[in-house]
Length: 207
Image (tube, rainbow, N blue to C red):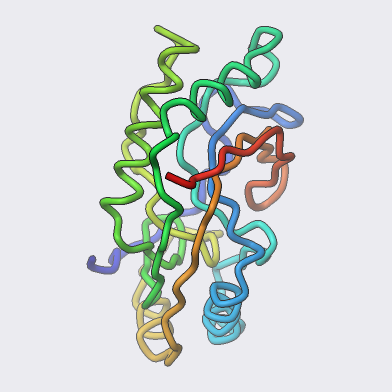
């Protein structure tokens, strides 16, 4: 996957978002994975003197899988219904084994791509199918850019990516492999520089 040649300021606010608002979302929380924290810390240390980027706190590392509408618009019982539908649809889905290697410049972030990406695509497809049984026509469309990575830092300005590319390429770090035994349904908030959340429930991947 090639580096982006240009970066733009990270757009924290999306359509409909405002301060204090939150959404229901499925994600893989990865901040408690020691090997991934080691790898991310190495890259963030290399990036410490690079202007124009804000590092993502390690405890908030994640891969966003699917947003399910705003929390304040969800009917009572929506979270429980989503969890039940996902547990049924993912009953045969095994725990994930994901590998992270070199850093990558994306249009709004510096990131660690996850492999195999086909596994994340399959998981996301099944989650969307499960979510559709609950929300029906309110299912959000597929975004133009789908998360298949863990963000290391977000861009704070528009400009060329040449120095970011050079810094990432010059960083020597051992790859990380993590086992992810569950996904989380969360109440996602974007009030600060990175996504933060409250876990509402989990779905075990033990197929």
